[in-house]
Length: 238
Image (cartoon, rainbow, N blue to C red):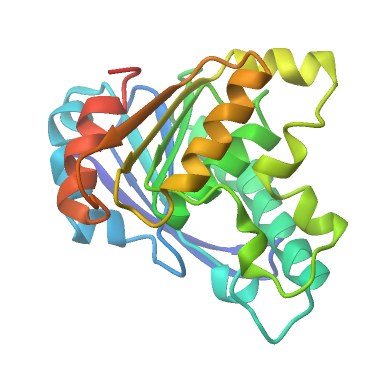
């Protein structure tokens, strides 16, 4: 299996950033790590191995991103707006540095975003804020209402919270782009985040955005479940 480690000094973030690429061809898949996780976690916890057949055959390519969650979402020493501004810089790093880097070696026109737990939050937020760049979203055990992470509610939270900004979205072009996304959300019935999946699902239906919400038996919030989920959903609705 093709495996490539890359590190460079990010202009958008003003700091070094690392990532791992697995696979040589196929749809490009941005993998966001769990909360405050690292770019190597997807490999260390068996997710890459679960997708080995697709990666070796050229049916899929993974770009495993690093996080800066401790500088943004979970930086409780900073103000809410400062934290979200830092996240916006992270988005710019992906848009202006990561995607051009991957495109230079793999010209496949399909881009997937995925992640587990808070990685799914990242994946959904990126896809819904940039639907012109993404074709499929696979969110596993994600949180889609981030208000609980902040002591103060501001406009910055609103624009980074899917259950807030989606109901009020009226831009016809942006809605059409979101409706073209393949959206798969999977979570355990007993997961403490399940309520936010139901909330997002209802909002999507209210906006005539087709998607799949898959509720698994039990808690299902661990790597063994996510390994099974990703093999079922990475290539579309199952």
